[in-house]
Image (tube, rainbow, N blue to C red; front, side, top):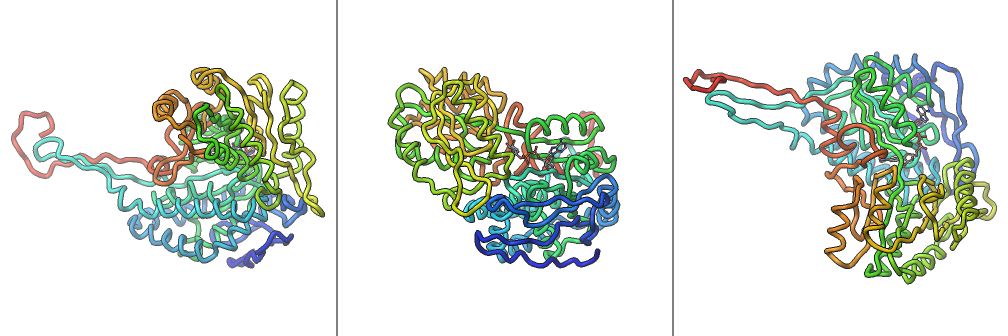
Length: 500
Ligand code: NAD
């Protein structure tokens, strides 16, 4: 199969559109996977297939590795400043095709157009960061003794890969790809099998931006493709973003072979609300955080820890939630299975004594068979309920009550996950105390989604991340490169030191 130019994704509204089939992008060609099998891809807003995706296995990963090997030597020898030119161009092309990309994300993921735009714009920010790396990755150098100089240079690892989840089809690949390319690697991406179109468009744009064939490749598939990547002896490093269950398995599997692994997992983000918190700021931010992207964000505030009497803030939160218009302010969830899973969490919590303040079960959009769950608020949740301690990954805010700030903080410490956490307060001393005590990789003060903007790096603690360092920013660049330390003596000085 040879065409390198895809038909463009022309959908520009929420109306249903069919898309082209998704093939693998290997060595600059669109090719079918070796299994001969295809998976239907659905538009979750409509609950109908928009296309189909080829399924791959070990032979497809091997083919991508062979193409990468051919392309690598020239790319390794390309100065970083020149590598950056591809990313400058990619940024321009993403901006040129912004509308198309945003609608594409909306169609394959079910996000609203505005949320799709958030995905793409944050992806562009990651491209911008990587495109500036040649200004920052100059390494350090020091005269460590008379006539003796030490310096460090960052070398590429070689062939590296990324495995990504469904919830941000453009941004999460771009957490990895630009930094890895700037470091001089060849990258193989395994997109989520539920949303493979974003990666297809990225392949097209990187080609147009001038990246040589074999340096960015896409292998589509499920578990077989993932395991083939993690097991391949010539792939040096793997970045993974997805559920903790899979992150932990893959981290162990890859590390056992000596591979460099960084695996980001699930979340249950606690948001502590104290009585002095600003009512409007808190309620509006919590609602934006909990229900944005239908709660399918690893930084969603899924658990409000209400300290003391904050009934006024809970009432204001419920009032905001009731104004959310399905299909306009909030998109669908990803699948029928997700609807069932989310309903189960709500049913169980209710049976175990939680009060359903706003009930999103059974929500529908008129004339539409998509996968909808309305925004839901559960009060009087306890940590022994599944809704209190597990990741629901849907538009559900669970409220637990605690008498003191210390009790709220100890509750957060009991969580298996530690991606994000936040405190809402108007008192600096309270904010500072909470920031120091909360155990999470990303902490917010009066911010519901404390996602660090570039250049600050993204990554959680505990079971929300396996591996060292973070996924984006300077840590990301370090993950995809190896530091070579060089010690040189070009003049002979007489010195008492053992180096001279
Ligand atoms: P997932 O773990 O089901 O899938 C992620 C990737 O792993 C996909 O590409 C999938 O094909 C692959 N995969 C799934 N099962 C596998 C298996 N058994 N063996 C090998 N590979 C497998 O996650 P998802 O449902 O796509 O995404 C939602 C999850 O991702 C949530 O838990 C969310 O919190 C998490 N997430 C975390 C972050 C973060 O930065 N920590 C960011 C986004 C999403």
